Image 1 (cartoon, rainbow, N blue to C red):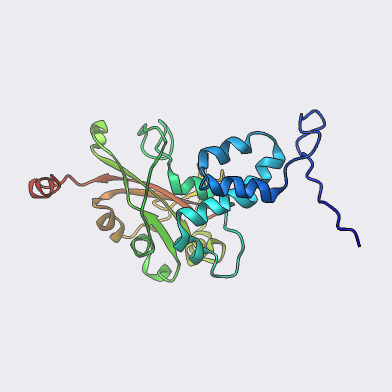
Image 2 (image 1 turned 30 degrees about the horizontal axis):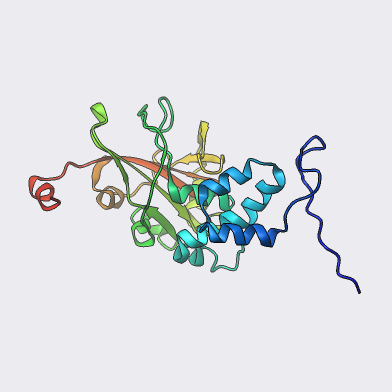
Length: 248
């Protein structure tokens, strides 16, 4: 029996220039492996056509996530799922991108441009501080706050983000549905474009969250999207003189 070579045809349109098919997926995989799954290169490849975009979402972003946060990825997939809620590209962006805030957007009219971050620590232990006692069996990874200092009347603010494991079956989602929590009328998740629940309006932000963030108790707010991505903002407490001196 003669083995047939799989044909990789463009899924873009008849007018696309990719009329002769594409490189074998294994070759592209090896090239990006040598590039250590560079996110800029993956994003650029995704713009070529839908075939490359599909390959990036299925394979390349997945390997990027596994390389960038191997322990988190192992845990997120330990339930037997070979995918993650909201797709790998969305998770890859969440790992390296602080969404900031637009004027008139999610967070009290504060305007801070979104930006890429070199390195962020995500913690499952910290995530427990963002869950009500009756939801503490859920698994949530939350980042340290990305600090943006001297934001006018708001003072020093921090943006944080996170990801739930198996959000579709989580107690948090069940509680939101039971409370008939409303979605934000206009804003969408900056990572996957899904609808967002306001956890403040749902009265589901525990007091422990402000302690974990080092923030004022009444100045913590965050949203959770249908795919279990979390994004939030807080007003940070000022460092004491002794704390400031210890960092020099």
